[in-house]
Amino acid sequence: MKITLVGINHQTAPIEVLERAAIRKDELDRYLQLLGSYVPNGIILSTCNRTEVYTVSSDGREAEKDIFSFFCTCFNFSDAELTPSTYVITQPGIVAEHLFRIAGGLDSLIIGEYEVLGQVGHALQAAEKAGMVSLPLRHLFQSAIRTGRRVREETGISKNALSVSSVAVDLATRIAGDMSTCRMLVIGAGEAGRLVAKAARDYGTPRIVVANRTQERASALAMMLGGTAVELSHVPQVLSSCNIVVACAEAPQWILDVPQVEQAMKERPELPLVIIDIAVPRNVEPAVKQVNNVFLYNMDDLTGISEANRKQREEETALAAEIIRAELDKLTAWWQALQIRPAVSALMEKAEAVRTAQLNKTLKKLRSLSQEERDYLEAMTKSIVVKILKDPIEYLEHNNGSREDSIEMVSRIFHLKKGKSE
Image (cartoon, rainbow, N blue to C red; front, side):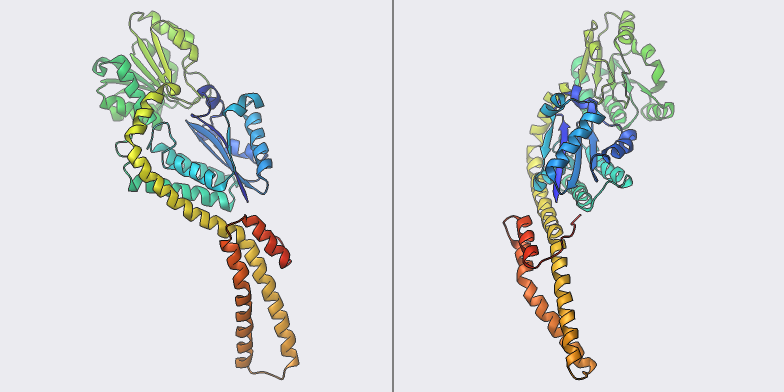
């Protein structure tokens, strides 16, 4: 059994690469179907900070090539574009530790953030629905979800936790100054938009406008915060009266482009406009930063604030690492049992077949026995088989060398038929 992980994240790829491989929630089913053309099983984990594919196969190198082809074809990457930003992990323990850290919020841009645990769960659910989950993958992700919950319940890593949304508002505050005189436009009424609007209100922003593709969601969020809602198509008109814009909508194309921003700035040339784009893919055309008196920031600009958050949570991170190690031990034991299960089953089936055949042959040569005598012979021969198999089974379970080599050796000695562990 080979577990292969191929991915890109905020640590390995610039946002220009990361956004090209970003998958919106409503697109995930389609991409899982496409993935099925490359590998027999797989789970796609796509968040604002990463896009990763996990698969289990008998040949890790072939799986790596297949997933690479999936990335290149489906996201229109060339090998030269993708390779520098990609990481590949094939050791099961390291793959598991990586995923456990993600689920625990340790590998996020903002340490301890909550959203990613739900995203790991959604990735598993979507893959289950698409029929793309094998037993090892299911157990891996279920273990990761359990680990993420333990980290949040047993440590303070998520206590007063920041989020990308709250960090974006914090950045806006540093740039714009007194928020009590600002008008903020929030583009997107999803979870990120809700967190942005709440953080803005907590910072004392009195006027919040929410724009969203679905008017009902924008109205609901605005009502909850005492703000106002506008349709997404009305954003250019609202822009001219705003001090701060936080863009966090799921959209396949720019929501704000240069002409729209230039037009808005003509109506307020002396008033600065701060735009923070935390959407992946981005909502705002990058060239907007060239417009006079406009200050545009994106996910890459949040690194400094996230590093300060990381240092504040070092002690809790160490406690979380202990939980991860304990959960890794459980998963490793399960994987080892899974790997040897076919060989053990084949060994026991063969021994039982030999025992039954020989017992029946012997019984035919004996005088007629009572049921009690037959039961005694049955129990005795079963006990002999168990004792003979005890040593080879323990060897498979506890051998510290190559488990695959051990399974192969036992299979050859006993002429066992090979079975599947997935």
